[in-house]
Length: 404
Image (cartoon, rainbow, N blue to C red; front, side):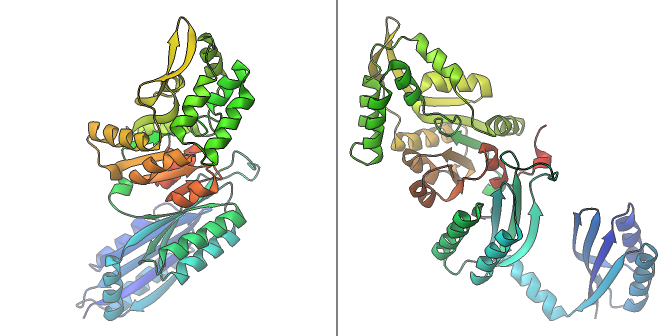
């Protein structure tokens, strides 16, 4: 019978090591059943699962490997693997695979320990751990730092609701975002990203800025509060707030547009999406004028929002056409995907408000961005610790793969 051996190699990395090691194994017609390598701070960890043919004596193989690695200053360990063990391992490949992503300004041992405990309690097994964020200099601290670790796990959670609750508790107590996704074909084949505008792509709520310019900021805020309490729906609240803007000069829109501030990471995210050929869209309950302003600046493909009626250079206090509310956002998301020939599983939607939930639920990947707790709990994924470019980590994109 052939023999199966697991070879574990560790030590300071050096050029040509893999080549020379494989050269030795090739002399004995060894088959490679599995191989994996990781580098942490110039230290190499290499694992090779080999099958030595039954007509070959395993001792000379291991002796040559041992002498070679000893001369290279590397540590090596050989572990025999029974065929029954190997077959059990092969059968495990049929279990569902999921991705757990940890996002924050930094990642601590306590965070990983707590998350790992939940993984174990749910009957899942960690197969791989990869850092997606770039190497972090010690002096880079605070607001602009980014850290992300991705765990690949096998198995089916015992109770998904309990797991999500446990992850939410860890997130709240330790200041980290935790994403749990099925690792399927669509996760690696997303092609479109749609964004809410106000408090997502930009930091402000545009209607509040316009109301301030019109001197009706307090009145506008009262209507917004009524809508948040559920006393009036989004459509009615929008009509009432726009009515307050009646008579506002048209050139005020340009002044407000110039004062808008992009959300942290928005430009980096858009630059990366365009470089990778993604379709991008704004689907907003705000106003088309400001969506067009962002479209020109960021190179966005589609803009759908509400149109303000303007007559003789002044706002009439009315909205033209169909109001873009939550259900309409979902309809538009579906329409753009169909026009682009994409399945909804290939679509990502990002938003912060309750009226974004219909499109977040419809998209293959829906992300609540710096949203209120009720929205976070309803959305499948959320980002609260990083900027908008944290979306790239949930797509499995490393910092090293993004444009400068």
